[in-house]
Length: 356
Image 1 (cartoon, rainbow, N blue to C red):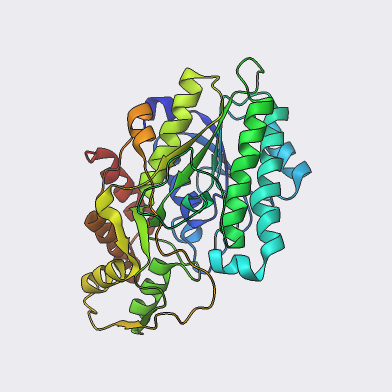
Image 2 (cartoon, rainbow, N blue to C red):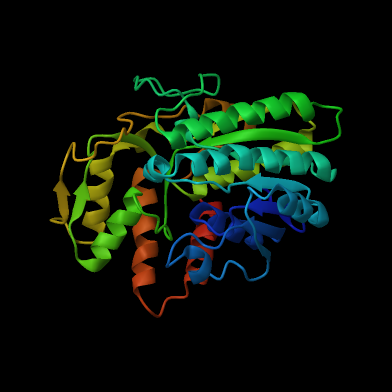
């Protein structure tokens, strides 16, 4: 991430009111970018967006990416150089309750965004953020690479696989070099953790709610392995990718993984116990293995060799550091005197100064 590249850069960011979007908006603002955010109202109460005053200093617009006309008008009037698409229905378990809405947001919403970019005429680089769950997960010991097939058993994972196929199709049809629409790429991250996440049915959010309330932490799938990473890791990857596309483009469509190092491929129980230890609630965990009847992948890891060699990107914080910074954020929030915007910006500054 080159702050000089981002200073004054016009960035259109969808999903800026969500967990990852709020962190990304603050990260861009710290580097001096000119941001317009387009998203629904914050999805949780409390929300990082409100607590950290993310709306300060950016153009904040409430809108639904399923509204193609409003989305296109907003993007075209702002005339951005960079588009970062994070808006999504992000919860696996919710996708079982609202499958059609999940596809409408994650697939059709992505199509609306790409069509709006195509019509805008100002965009140098577009990064479509999907998920590590876009891959057809056969639960092998091999980490998934960018050329592995798309798939997904649950509606959420399937919708992200569909979004990848859609992005590839638009990229090959409308964003080829010489067409004047800039470059488009897709980005796939691991399981992100970090302060400010209050979504239902996300592990760290559930753990922190339980610890703060003095309740038990119930694990339904303790042996599931995930590529855990602090939220700043993939966000730095998205920005590195966007800068690469804008600087070297126009380039043909491509997909990129931004996952952690192998030491961060840990079980749900390992992460939960580490967080509880830091909170000094070592007795807080209760395991109810097999209590969920919904399909959840048991093993999922990413291979990020391509980003390391092609972009020079690599993770900066290991598994322990990611958990430490996450718990520290929630500890600061529990202190009513903490300025959470300043605290979050200090974590971003610390991350940027750390070595990979």
